[in-house]
Length: 374
Length: 238
Ligand SMILES: Nc1ncnc2c1ncn2[C@@H]1O[C@H](COP(=O)(O)OP(=O)(O)OP(=O)(O)O)[C@@H](O)[C@H]1O
Ligand SMILES: [Mg+2]
Image (tube, rainbow over the protein chains, first blue to last red):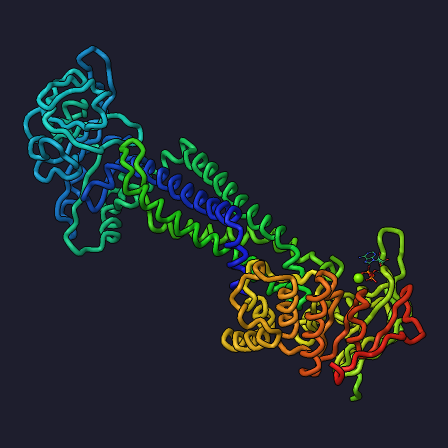
């Protein structure tokens, strides 16, 4: 039975490859679309994901790490003394307008970290370091934004909100959801460049004592700061991503195109299986005349479809992994996740099962009597 | 229990297409003894294939009784029919109906697969059957590389796979030239006799009439009353 199913499948290379190609197509599409979506979403929580804080404390109604609201720094005193807290630092995520050499204006984010730890500062330095950002008026800029900032070089000056800032470091790969350039610096410089009111900041970054229960600590902080929002990094990352997802409907467009891809894949597998079954109707009729029952006939089709699904999935996974290795685009990062690979492989298995339904129903209708009359 | 392997009485069958009803078999009764080789002959359209399909549990009669190997099969559901076919019956078709992508050996093995015989055992028995039809040396060949006569002998081995009680053949020589046809019939006849299989053959081919133990003539859906005058096949003379 197995060899009948497989050899019949192998005897028709055209249909076999069409089916496998359908599976490869569907699987690669799911993972690339899904990976681009995850990559895009991860840009919405870029600052959170690259910061080593254990808790984020922000204004009560904050719902996005980039669009922060001011909170009074004095609140920090209420939680400093908690035994599980190692240190609390102010953090600024502010906005500014840079005036470029040619007179053009460009909106920028200004991110200021406490100089003691530089927690939440830039990463991926290709020139300079967090240390160089501690110099007066020093900021970093990213390679991605070279064009937007009119190709500045390290050492040049930039005017932000009418204040002078010096570009001392360059990074690679830091770009957020709204694609405004990030300028990383210290709290003090950030306060000046973003015109932050004295005594206020955007967030408190909390570092906990090693080994303490973060959820419990979060609860303690919430109790002490009833007017603040307290998040663990995964929570805040999710909230920041949801913010854009709900406002842009980006999930729907990615989801819809992925579904279309799945449909095309399903049709390719189904069509080749069905055509294969039609070509071999006489053989299926013979099997039935010989006494094969429906479950045995069904097994033949399932073996064929799952073989195509299995080979296609294997090829697809290899392609996805290769693409993931070769892909580099900070503006459209691709995030290949094992869970997504696994999930899409399961979807492929379901597609294989669904694709066998039509040929199965067709073959079920065959009357074995045709073998004698033919 | 008596010696009749197949016992049919009062079989009626009509094909219904749309509004028209074509009666094909009327009050057909017959008995085939265990180990007997019966030929069904008659003009085209007389209902031979229809009768063979009913005896083969592929079609159900509209009415009448049919007992095969002491089992009343006329009221079987299609699932019961399928099970009965794979366990008790073997078929040989005019156009062989071998599986094109498989070797001669695999074509025989698939009949064992249907009844759940394990791979090793089915391989052993299939090779033995191919040997008995004179094709042991072609076991690994793709069936498309075999001659017509060889293909029909593979089909015969496949029909015998799983040790069925009854072999049913519809025009087994019609796709073969005279020599290959005679040869295939010889193999069928001898093999079934040595294995004590009951055989029903539908044929137009008068050259093979002498191989029948008995010949029944079907005419307009009825068994013709007069005995057929051909000389019976004598094995002792062969
Ligand atoms: N599926 C069917 N639907 C309607 N009529 C059918 C069907 N099968 C056979 N018939 C009719 O039933 C009659 C008997 O057919 P059957 O095939 O049994 O004859 P036969 O004796 O085997 O003929 P031949 O020698 O040509 O093979 C014919 O008139 C045929 O047209
Ligand atoms: Mg016929």
